[in-house]
Length: 405
Image (cartoon, rainbow, N blue to C red; front, side, top):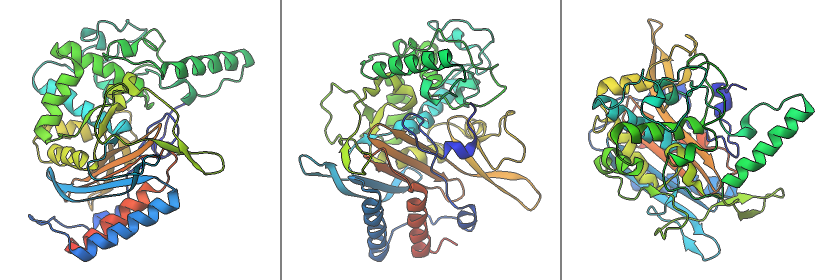
């Protein structure tokens, strides 16, 4: 089963997706952002009302929001409980699971290694990740970045077979994979063991299928190319240059200050603790804890050229050969892209971002390429809808307050 862009906007248990982009008409009217931005007290209060209303509607324990530009935080707030049982209030320091927003970070670090001459995007993945066996087709590194590698996603995301025996086998694989969610991994190479021997679903480059497993493999590629552990690379290449002082691996054994508890809703829509999952297997694809303000620091740093250069950014947002020419939305290298059509008929990228859904979390990070404004939303509940509506309301308040039209 191939994922269309529209299907990527849905939040499911394992497919961490892109429910992060908003009204093209609204954002197309935004002008250039002011050099200095300060929200009025009235605007801040309006945003707090919107957040609290969203929290009550979604029955979310906590919601953390940040708005930034060029790596600086313009405004931030958090409401609700980071830990219901112990009555711990959420604050801007609260650390939530990033989920698949991490793919944007991992892709950016990969492109930095490309700039340094340590990775060739056209080389086979086995050139750098020796633990991954050769397949029927060659898998260029670039196909991991835009989900066209043919590497599968989680078993329960694949289309259910018609044959009863095949369905039974699939169900068994789903259960086995679920058992793996309880395993603690300490390196990214071992994390490819559950899928490294599986055949590819299609010839690399011919189709697009969202896959966290492909990004796990990319983590192994990064380590092999730089001869440096993935976590050290991320600290040096992404976290430190962006000022992301509160972002760390989501280690289930570690004592991590300000880590929120994750929640879900049961069938009767009562709040409960989220299903337990040791996310260490998914580190490169979505295995960090962060804060809303750290995420807008990253997005702003990426946009301002503090991380990758302009040529790399252009490659990350470029329309791949697998993307239909008329498509307004598509997945680039680690980011989903929204375009608008100019008067000459050219479709120009205007927004990039990523969203995530994972046990105990729902997140979204969006960047306006035109204004440099970024908004991040982090929620410690995995049964959440309406992040697009929430972000639209926040951006509208900011636009009205600062007269960005």
